[in-house]
Length: 356
Image (cartoon, rainbow, N blue to C red; front, side, top):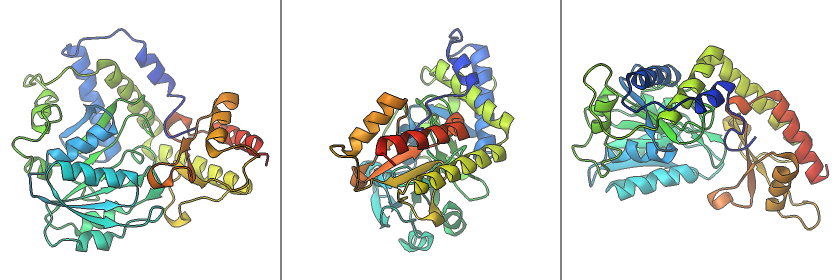
């Protein structure tokens, strides 16, 4: 339990201890191709440029934006949490004229406000599952009305846990991470780029390492690969195993497992007398935000409660982030960790530590 998986799929653990192959070894390149195809299925896309970027989810965010923003480009960014804030800052640093569309933290973005914010933006950027608040935003509605703008979506906390439909929703670029609902260790940022977005990649983005035009040559299957950088072979092998486990289970089945565990967690927290932060109408199942209660045990801070859970029960929950620091706990139930036994253990442990 926590913002990331504490217990990876057994297949992932096995992948992490296999002998390391070279990053240009034909066996690795075949595994990389298979991983890219598995990511296409999970993103629900046919995009040829779909791959695991070397770097965490924030690298995916930066790659998505710096490759599409020329200085002065107008970028509409939805901000209702820390990671919307981060998207706006990355876009600003890339030279964009940023048009913010804010919603209170804990409430969803208004799709109509995003679409009406500017008559002809270069792109619209938004977070699907806001990790700081536990709120789900309506991507499909924005994709349906985006007109000529490109739509960039953060699916860091959603991919593998709830429905993500890149092609059906009109998403041009989506990025995620390896460690949350996909259930692999941190270190990779799956990304998918539509042909429409590829046609608009800037000629010389403000990052050589994250230049998608160059990276595309390395992941081109067949004999036309162009070396770009040394791929993290072991991490890609772990992601290959994790995506394989997810697809073997079935994407719909994995979504339903996350839904059931999330609902059981939410019900159990409320039975403990705790208040959930995100409204039920837009609440994520895989990441639940809980209002820190006023009646903590004598002498205990909210950080003390988290430390006790970790030290005495081996369970980690996240603190609040940004303007919610000290005000909420973030409890993740993702990947292989999204199991009823883990929910039961967390509820029992939290009840004991809180004296409830």
